[in-house]
Picture 1: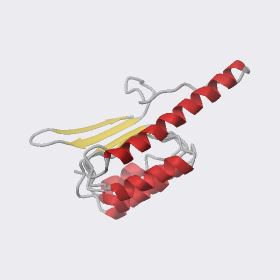
Picture 2 (picture 1 turned 120 degrees about the vertical axis):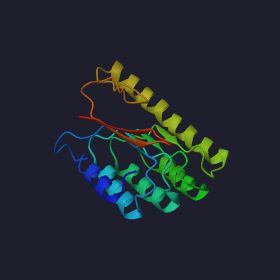
Picture 3 (picture 1 turned 180 degrees about the vertical axis):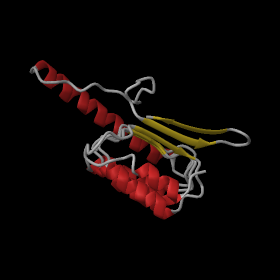
Picture 4 (picture 1 turned 60 degrees about the horizontal axis):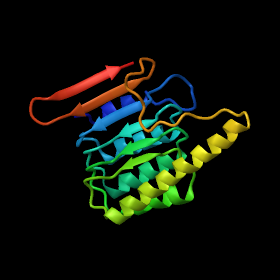
Length: 185
C-alpha cells in the first residue's frame, strides 16, 4: 500500500551509474495509490539505475501511458533483465510499443511478463520469440568469444534470492490479513 512518497524513497535506492551500491531486484506488487507522477519517477530511476536486474510491478493499475514510460526506461537501462507487468491494465497498444522496442533496439531484457492483460496472445508470443532470439544470439557471441579466449557472460533468467550479497527490497500487499513488507540490504 505504498503511495508516491514511499515510491520516491525507493527510487533513492536505485542510484545511477554505480554512484553507490543499489537494489538488484525490486518488487512493488499491488500499490493502487501510486499516481502516474510516482510511476514516472520510478521509470526515470530505472532508466538510470546501474544495478537493477528484476522489476516486478504486477497488479498495479498502470495502463498504457505508464507502460510507454516503462518501455523507454527499459530501452535506456543497461542492466534490467526481467520486467513483470502481469495484471496491470495494459492493452495491445502498449504491447506494440514493447514489441517495437525489442525488435528495433538493443536491450538487456530477457523476460517480459504480460499475462492477465488485454493483450492478444499473438503479440505476447511475438515479444517472447524476439526476447528468446536475443538470448540465442548472445549465447552464440559468448561461445565465439569463449573460443577466442575472451570472457563469456553467464546467462541467468532470474536473479537468485539466495545470494546473500544481493540487495533486494520486496514490498507487496496481499488480500485479507496478509501484508508482507520485507527489506533486505
